[in-house]
Image (cartoon, rainbow, N blue to C red; front, side, top):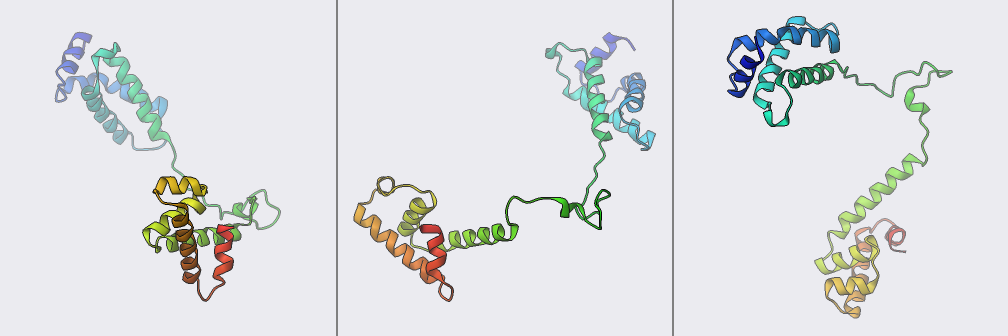
Length: 196
């Protein structure tokens, strides 16, 4: 098949013309051997390559000043390289071959912090956010902006359009309600971690 015939088929997006598939079948096979063959069924890989030719015909843009053959060659290369990637899921619970005892990979990782304390802290913060959401809207806004966003009282007053006395009343009432939400626990200590 000559280049003029290939250009005609590609320009017309004639994906049903069997000649173009037969003409590029050797390129598909060479691409498989060069980039992919890893024990998979060769017929299946060829069929996938022929299907990729269909997509290449539909996606080809002549304005890019690249011949269809060069475009297809690059496309097949990346297609088969992508198929060649082994998808392995490794577990950190596998015994380490370099460890002296029966240590697993997970045991060899070093943590910069105490993971238990970190998880407990995250749970406390999540619970605090949930309790802040229970407050009336004005108190919620004041507590959130002042303590969690760490804005000063002047900025909070300006953003919310409230006076200083209204700010202090909302802040105090919000903190008091948060302490009540933690009744049965040391609510003062829990709130103090976040507001002091």
